[in-house]
Amino acid sequence: MKNILVPTDFSEDSLNAVSYALELLKKSPCNFYLLHVNDLSGYAYQGLSYATSPEVLVEDVIATAKKKLHVFLKKVGSMAKTKEHHFYPLYDQGFFIDCIRRNVEERKIDLIVMGTKGASGALGEVIGSNTGDVITKVKCNTLAVPIMASFGKLEEIAFPTDYNIFYSAKILSVITDLLETNKSYMRVMHASKSGQLLTESQVKNKEYLEDYLNETFEKKNSFHSITNKNVTAAVQCFVESRNIDLLVMVAKNLNFLQQIVFSTKVEKISFHTKIPFLVIHD
Image (cartoon, rainbow, N blue to C red):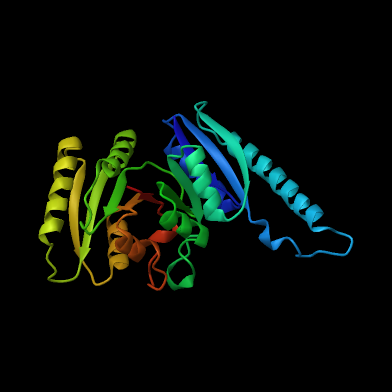
């Protein structure tokens, strides 16, 4: 049984993220924990009249949030694809990341699912600040789903990497589960500047990954090298040319991850708007 945490603000973004996750995990028994976090620090005096005490105002905020949570729960429950999916509402108060960490630990969460605005290039943020904080500050695998993403067949999975990390058993286990469950192809992509050669360490890491994928998923993987000054532009080119359905990245490789996920100034970059990405924590 997999335990899935879905932080929600009741928006269309989070509803779409749940919809995607239900399709992705329809072959797996899962507990879905729908979590709403209220940071009440700003409510103490906000809109407070002489006739209203801070305690009453806070109680109203909590009551309203819990009503919305149960409405959201009903919507999600009606979208269930299997009887093996179970749904539980969770309400928490405090700083967002602290609440996420606490619930990840208490519920033994395997995967966090979050929606993103999916803004493109210089037009806005690629992902919201909450999603970005979860990816970088919470040690749990996270699936970020853009508002324009919809689940079809998960045939092509891209794994952008610079080969600067060792691919541990935990990383390979997540990749294996994805490929086996969805009968997918893994496309490993490396972007480099012109004339830039791999170091000895990078070569060893690449060979290890090649050996594993060739042994476990023969004829279901391929390795690609793209020359481009900009990593994000290279990923865009690769996603378009291969009709990629999902991006997989490793959180441990923070510098490389930030270039792809948190780049907001590169024009003509659109994969953020429709391609979900899974960030694996080692």
